[in-house]
Image 1 (cartoon, rainbow, N blue to C red):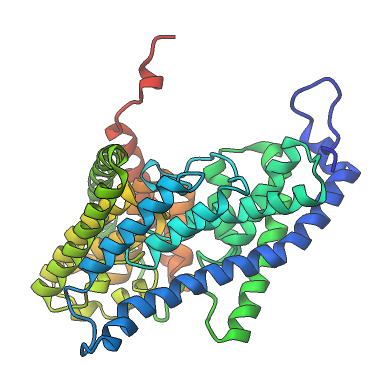
Image 2 (image 1 turned 45 degrees about the vertical axis):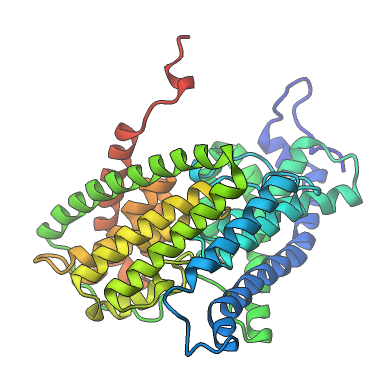
Length: 442
């Protein structure tokens, strides 16, 4: 397919001219057609992760004769995860895809040769207990599959059109993962750094693919009985209107999240540097570290080790609904163990940074809600927003993640979330170490 027409003689065609062109309409039709199989593939990948997770964490111990899952079980499980992830990164093309410690980096869609490595590294990481989410691998796989399919049909596709197809494939793959196709679309838009009409140029096919993907997820979830793998909360306690005191807590939460998030980020980058020196051995060690942290949490609190493992997406609802069953001490131990496991996973495994940051922020907000002047729902929402922006550096996405998740109660707490996100974001930028590129003489 030829590149959508633009202004002759320029490197960057006028976006409005491109949108009005016939080739752009053909691109939309192609994107709509691709949205169905890519969304189905994303749904299947999430289902596979969930099934392997249940098989290895619950079914396998029982098959070996244990009465339930022993508290030490995550230690060997994460060692196997580290070994398999390291082998996929080291021996397959593409080094397993996106490095989560470096945040969301727009490195383009993986090639066809790199897709198996991305999928296998993510599967070995996410399904066996690494503290990461599936969003980054889905974005890569969706974009890579879309470009591969289009190049099979149109080998001569231009780079700019290929980039739009890749973006649309990523939209389709994460269409409902975050609870709403609009929220997934907003994440990709803000992470891409696009603006103005150029944003609209990519946004239209992306939203089309996202809407189709959402319908596919809902349909497959109903047909298979597996659900949609979408971020939802089954029960959100009512929250009163914000008070002056809660705005003070919003500032405090923003400061705390910025400090903790910066610490996790720096630790994960330092670990990543060490891991890359001796990939297989150190990834296994990082897996053992995550497993030991889960064991320490289970033995010291009497709760399930799985609360430290995995992304935390499925545990968010229970964390809020069962807040009364968590003592402050238990929440603090959970935060420390989850944060260290998160840093180790970011530095060694493959996955996305969003869901663990949400879980950590939620746990921190709930811990502070035991103090006077802050209710649980407000603390939960502010913690999510502040920690997300500390890890992602995406302020608008962080506000939407924290508020849309709470449904109607999200509207009430939105002013508090905005304050906590802004405070965290500004402080993180001040705490962030300048890169060599930014400090080099011009």
